[in-house]
Length: 324
Length: 279
Image (tube, rainbow over all chains, first blue to last red; front, side, top):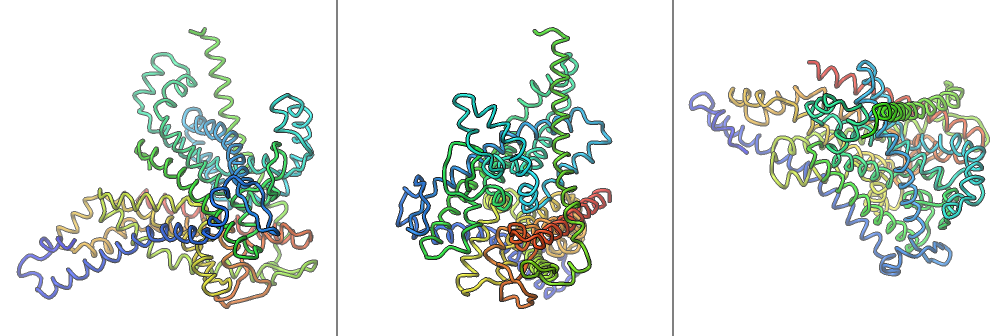
């Protein structure tokens, strides 16, 4: 990395001493940047190692059955991760089911329909949703959304969809306000800006030539989006969705407010539940005994493995579309 | 093939739905901001900045929590900024095309989106357990670890925008590489990198999950960084979940303060990057 010197020191202009100092400074700067970059990598490894070490007592005691045991009893020191895993997956699934169509809609609006002058302001407004901290979503979800759902939406769901065979199970029980559905809706709002901004960016990678040719063939705007834009940007879209999913899986505070924190699996989406991150946030400081703490860290390890896999897949897909 | 009128009808329905989706997104933003102002504004009095968090059922402010949040954020950013910029420099300038560099970029991006509660667990293990108590230092460390990948990533992006001609020109003048970086490239990318730092501050300001078990909370004014310290997000969480009206009112006030601060940071960062882009 000191090669620049060949150019920087024509004979006679720079004394040998200056040149040597220059090499040393170059070397030092290089090592400094290398060290910083290494530190970032070491941090991630540190996170992994510390989680495995912290989770070890619980994993050694319960083995793999930790993953599919539902029981969570701090008093009897029996811990199983099934309920939080279930809650995490179901809330994220609801968030995706609601968030993806809305995000796609916004992206289509911003790239195809919106008047030029409004694109930036609307785009910025949607991105501001990403700036609002998760605790604010939690506060809003708990004091505004949950009571609203409890008094108007949930009774309606119970009385209509609740009576339909098969899917009726999903909407049974009492309207608690807080629970899986509420958490899913809050998460959907939170992932909106992430999925929207990536969707919009990959939509814009579609060559103008393709787009214009399609219009020239007489396609309507919707047909262009459906038959040209979406197929062309398919891989990037999946990448954006995965990135949003990674966010939803790991989101903590917003969910902690509205999930109800109950280690139980019930079929109804209206019932209180818990997620991995909410369980850790709620119980970690109060956990007594090594096994309890260790079980919570083991939950964290599971969450880390899941999000790592999802984010890595997202990254890989987005690199393939050369949009990083 | 469907008839033309049918295709046109489909088109109108689909595009209206897209417009409706945009309305929903904007509606939620407005709903959240309006709620914050309606519930939070009455709590914003001079008292909220001057008095400490009260015991349940009495009046008070958030002075100690605001101080704790600012102190931890400042420490986190002071530590994370140089490391983030240097790491970004290595990944953008020195490791171009190398496998190892690509891997490090990948890992940084994973760290960027990793759940913050996991970062909290990590800092708890390495900084709280060994010392035997929660501390402001641990809180600052967890915030710093969240800010680091943000700064690293924006630095990479911003250095990537600096034209190669500048590097070549500096090299042709005989400047060694470190001098090229510090005197030419950093200046060219300066406003962009600053944007990254501001975004990192915005990101860190609202973080709650990692502080729950690193900085914990403190009912009193404390400037001792080796003890637990009050901070806005955790106070908001605790007060909002409490049954006391006074506490809930303060929680809304705190929420408004935090959100306003973050939105101002975001807008400033945007303006800065616009200035940088139009230069």
